[in-house]
Amino acid sequence: MRRIFIPLIAFVLAFAIALFVRASNSEAKAEQKNMSLVGYSDLGGHGDGGEGLAIQQRSNGRRILFIAHEGEKTCLSIVDVTHPEAPAMVNQLPSPAPEVTRCNSLGLSGNTLVVANQTMKTGQSPAGMWMLDVSDLPRMQKARSMQDLALSFFDTSGPNSRGVHWLWFVDGEFAHLSSGWRDSNPTNPKDDQFYMIVDVRDPRHPREAGHWWLPGTQKNDDCLPGCLPTRHPIDDGYRAHNVEVFPERPDRAYVGYMDGGEIVLDIARLADMRAGRVKSFSPKLVSRLKFSPPYPAWTHTVQPLFSRGLATVADEAVQEKCADAPKLIWLVDIREETNPVIIGTAPLPENAGDLCARGGRFGAHNLHPNLPSPTSAHLKNTFVGTFFNGGVRIYRLVDVSVPHAPQQIKEIGYFVPPAPAGNATHTIQINHAIVDEKGLIYATDRISGGLYILKYTGQEPLD
Image (cartoon, rainbow, N blue to C red; front, side, top):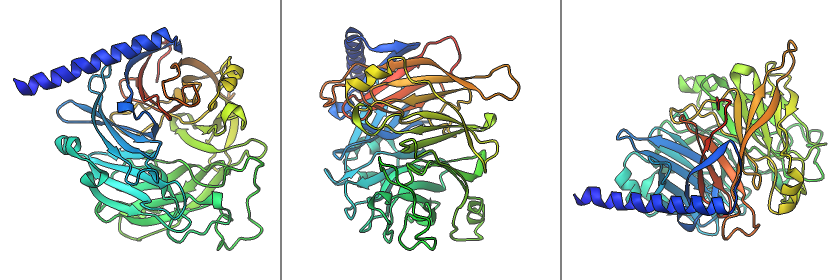
């Protein structure tokens, strides 16, 4: 009886808290269109969600959400979202080196979770990638550190490395990282992270399988000095941010390369690695779509929509009050992959000027990743983005009647929560969002707001 009673009390308390928060948000007049709040968690007072969200469906029906954190105090939150109206904390693990390392990103394949580990400065440690065993829920509940769940730690520390900022892990065999390395030597300190492939088929002994950086960003590049990249006045560096590799195109990596733009790489030789014919390889450049200058890029996320021959590409707003504006979501035609072409942008909110003036960041940031997972939505006609103080926004592609004319984009929904307590910018700062296979949207605030679980309520489908 006790085994049933205690979880029931926890559920009732969580549900009551969620109702209270929803009422508070309602009183504070969240800005919304065709979206509603389903559930909320302040993540135990550690509401600084990063760019990593993944849902695990367990065999007993429970659903576990893993959240990587933005700051240097908390690394990982493990949240039970079986009842999305009342998310319940399972456990929360601290930073492996408080005030030094942040976790920010993660990826999940089956019962293996990989978590990024980036330091605040180059030369610090630990820097790299954690591989965790998340098969045993009681063990996850009892864990007090990352080491308690660790299968291994892939070390990418070095004198010019801050470790791993972002990662992609969906097939259980290879992780795709934005990272520095032990012998990297960038031509500019801001160019310290590049694309790295890691073979994790033996999860206790991961090893580097290949890497690629934009030519001219490492001091030993043969093409120097003629290939030094042209730097924008707002110089955010030439370094890899997100990398996505999909089962539909296993021979391609789609990379957001910050000031370097959208990059497509040929990784066909990864198949040779799987077959044991090679131990390492170098990706090859297929194309690069560069729009900085004149635009202040910070290309953050490249999300292909294969069935349409398109990609959505988001630039990150980094400076407050739109000092680095405009930060946009671009619509790119990738049918001819050697010649990607911008064919449109997502419309800015009607109150964009007001959002710029509110404080904190406003502008594009992340896009829902079409994870090849049974707990992820696989969107092809709509896309979901985060806009910091612009909240979560949903867009739909609109086909036009003119033959071969490019699609247009319209906004079909948004949700902007009120500013959470303890947020120094006095605004919401929505950082990342994913959409599950049921259509629920999970979004995190990067400073203190915590986790928001949302539902789209519009007439046009979220598909």
